[in-house]
Image 1 (tube, rainbow, N blue to C red):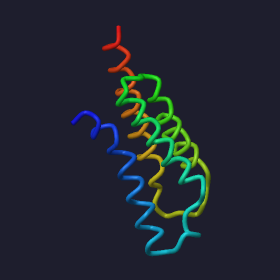
Image 2: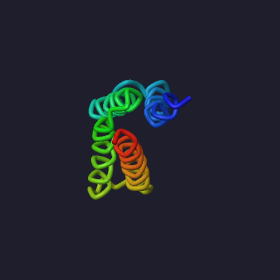
Image 3: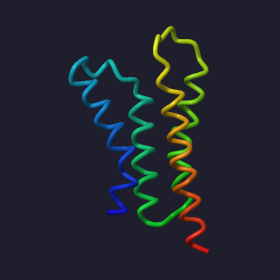
Length: 103
């Protein structure tokens, strides 16, 4: 059950981008987005192996999203900022919990 918990964010991101590709075509998703999804899966895998430093990969995705939210792109809905904050908090908590348990 714990392993599933770490993969939730990666699975949601993957489902979002796969559905976007199925409706809009492969060119609608920036290759950087696929790299970020891969980083979420790497983070989840490492966290399931009780490697607290695996949270750094997920945290980096959250930081990229926060940076993206500071760039003006003309979007009417700024979804990157809240998702970036949630990811940063999630991975900071997961990494901290695993770090404390390891001691």
